[in-house]
Amino acid sequence: MKRTFKLQDLDCANCASHMEHDIAKISGVNSAKISFMTGKLMLDADDAAFERVLNEAQTICTSYEKDCVIVR
Image 1: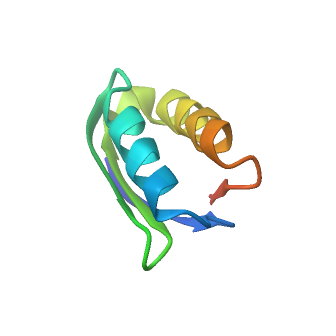
Image 2 (image 1 turned 90 degrees about the vertical axis):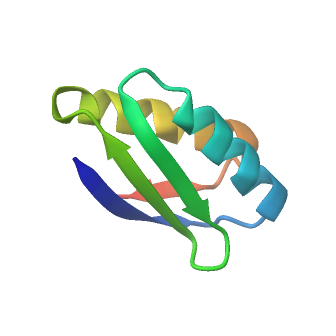
C-alpha cells in the first residue's frame, strides 16, 4: 500500500534524511521517501504490516525531532 502523510513540525533537512534512511529499513517497508521541502512522507509498505510500520516510523521521527508528528 502506498500512502502519503504530512510531517508536522519537521524542522531539519538533515534529520529528514536520517528519518528516511531508518524508516526504509523497517521490516515490511518497500520504499520510504521524505521531502523536506513539502514536509511529506511517501510510504510504500505491506498492507498487513502497514499500521505497525507507521507506528515504528513515528518512533523514528520523534527520535530525531521530538515534536515531529506523522499526520494520519
